[in-house]
Image (cartoon, rainbow, N blue to C red; front, side):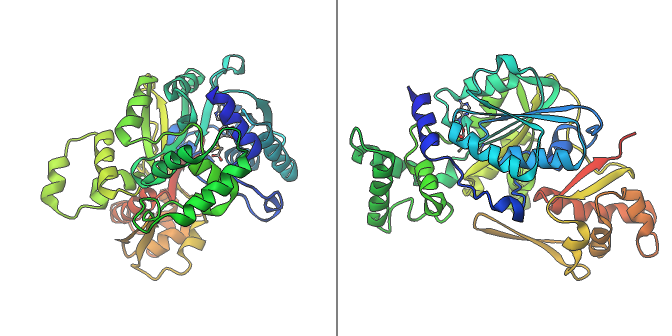
Length: 409
Ligand SMILES: C[S@@+](CC[C@H](N)C(=O)[O-])C[C@H]1O[C@@H](n2cnc3c(N)ncnc32)[C@H](O)[C@@H]1O
């Protein structure tokens, strides 16, 4: 029953709303499922791009992840098959049109449920972004995806975060009280607009500046406030679902956001958290920040005991800037500048070392650390260079701006 309601919603209001004309102007990128992130967090930076790669986009919606990954794999000449799967034929039609506009032929399209993956085979990578929290029993979804992973494969997930969505569930509950049987989707949207206009300044949604999806489009409003099946996760809830499915977390995105040390300056308080694992520290950071409206996480199977996250451990690591080539990133950066970032209402500024600008100018995605070192003014030795690189890497990787790969043997 609920699955039917969810499908009907996305037939009437495919989400997110996408404009086909955008395909000529830009590639919409995001997390999870950026190819450089998949390589860094799931394959230790050592993904062999000459080998066939199978990916599932589970609940692919209007296509953002499918199109981004298909384009990245096509640009990198990877012999890849991307399986797009969604309940909604309207969403699929939008994604098919986007793929056609880009001339992408590496996506196969299917209509159906991620709970029934029996015939699809195993995947190197699965994307499931903004879907599992809409299942009647999300654990069934986690388990179904985990079963479809190859032994060394990985999963990129996004689920709603509880604290950043303060106020959303109050308005959802009020709308359930107000909606009458038989009212159409458009009637409900009109009703929601009326209620939103009437919210007093003290209302928790009105006081939450982080949530704005309902302001962007009717589909966004429906998805946020009129959804028939929707829950949010705290970090411990999410970790529990992941571990019950036989998976483990490789990394949260952005990694530093889930580190209490990003927020706490008091060394005594930080010391008390020493020795805690990734999940416990992430749960603390979530409560402390109070602004996480979603959680993005890369997972691998528990029986995969390799270190799947790339590290800047040796001279052969190749830094890759995620959003813009290093030279572009560095262009307006004076020597010794700080790195600044904003995350949902919090501003951060982190010091960078004197060589930061020169290093970034050389990070065009092909040079190894050793090649970067040798090309720097005065070619510092490794022991002078490495601490400076690490001081660039820590904030940039922590805010998901810099990733690593290794050249194939
Ligand atoms: C909020 S949209 C997210 C779409 C896309 N993943 C994205 O991030 O833009 C949720 C999508 O999940 C799909 N969906 C929900 N339950 C599903 C299921 N059991 N199997 C497959 N798709 C499902 C819906 O049809 C909808 O297109």
